[in-house]
Length: 158
Image (tube, rainbow, N blue to C red; front, top):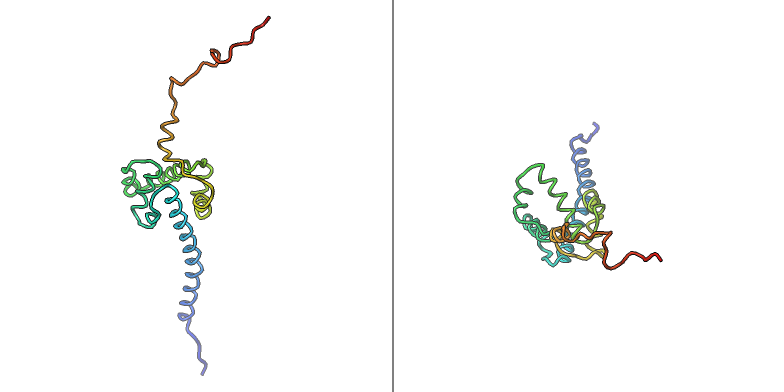
């Protein structure tokens, strides 16, 4: 008689192969992002190990970008709004390191590329972006009339 292997023996191997093909790249990408966050935290003067502690990493991230702790409740408890706040936090993180909104788009869509650029590149931590935004706000007393400039008198016509 002929001996045949059952299809259930083969399906277990196929599932394991698919799992390995999908899991290993995701694990590598996750490690790249984790190591990058560790380095970003140390660049900002915070402990790097905070990147691996689940809720504490958000608390430290909020300190880096200069936002209040009540944002943590929104991030953890309010569905759909937390997604918007996460994008906002990415934007404030890139601003804290002197990057633009384009870099924020990169952090959101390709974090495994842009987090290492932020961590291991030449970007320096400039301080919480919330303080910079408040310091750079419009003050009506700073307005100067362009037609009444004391430093540059109008030319004399002779």
